[in-house]
Amino acid sequence: RSKATQRDTAALADSKDTLVDLTDEQLVRRSRLGCVRSFPELVRRYQVPLLRFLLQRTRHRAEAEDLLQESFLRAYQKLDRYSEAWSFKTWLFTIAYRTFVSALRRDAAAKIAHREPRSDEQQRDHSQVTVLDQIGDREWRAGLWAIAGRILDPGQFAVVWLRYVEGLSSEEIARVTRRTQVGVRTILHRSRKRLMPY
Image 1 (cartoon, one colour):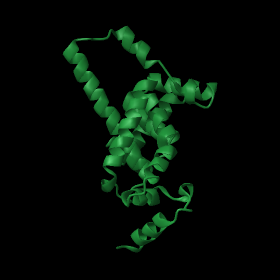
Image 2: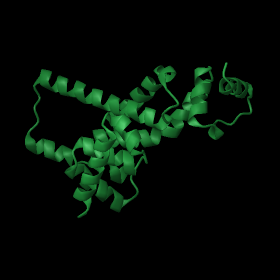
Image 3: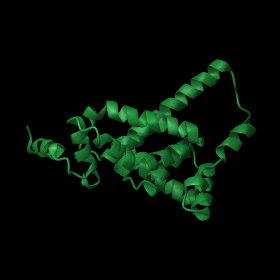
């Protein structure tokens, strides 16, 4: 076994170990070794930022919470596939983003099957709904993100959110959204220009 695995096995046996002091990667290793407290600590660390991200995508709290639970379930099930070549945060946001995209596809297929088209006016009204004033940093930020939600398409908005709210790098955003780094930088540049008058 590697030295890191041996250290983690020893730490796992130490009941006095404080989970909050461990890195995400150490918690993943401990969880893989059977520590039942480690993955819940990862959930505690990331449930708020992930929920905030999903709320911006779905605009409905119940739907965002469902996607949040599904994202964490998928992450737990795929924990053995996580590679420390990437940060755990990037890996987790990738799962959440892809869970959201899958849900969009399912919803689109269901709407087509049930023939429930929405009028252009309904679509415009839906696109202008914001939850930022519920979770954001007060009125100014809420107003800015509401404007961004109106003038940027969903892909652009996701890239801008991941950069400026979640602090992900261009490389990490490219991984999450399955774009090139050049594509991410281009979106950020164009989005900043579009938002500049506001």
